[in-house]
Amino acid sequence: MEEMRIMLVDDEERFLSTTKKLLSKKGIDLLTALSGGEALEMLNSHSIHVVILDVKMPGMDGMATLREIKRQHPLTEVIMLTGHATVESAVEGLKSGATDYLMKPADIDELLEKAEEAFERRKRLEEKIRVAQTRLSMKTPREILRETE
Image (cartoon, rainbow, N blue to C red):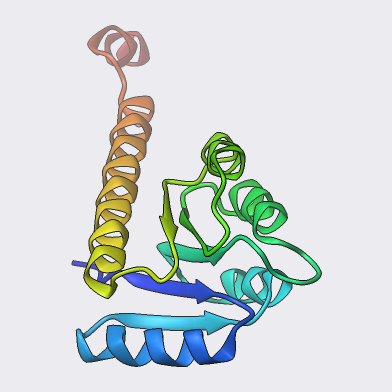
């Protein structure tokens, strides 16, 4: 069974290093990125299941990064993380494909729980896709009989 791999994206290096240490102690496979652009590059070269993404970052902000992640990697689950939450930004993030929204400073156990829920959601989606692909590749009895005629 595949282990969950998380990417934490935030422009605050101290937050990244502290959170990485805490999650690593819990046995979580975690990559970090300091910007939206760096996160997108890493997604192209690593199998990442859940992205925890800061909303406010210089350059490509979290909302733009979220939209690009969902465009390029639609099965990747994204949890938005911010210290400046507004109802509008939460709604925009969820409409753009975010799985959840957390406030900084987030409790590490709550963060992990949300990531695990997102990972389970992804696994359910992957299973639905596998079932649909299997159904498409299977022939009906009528098709099999036609081939033998």
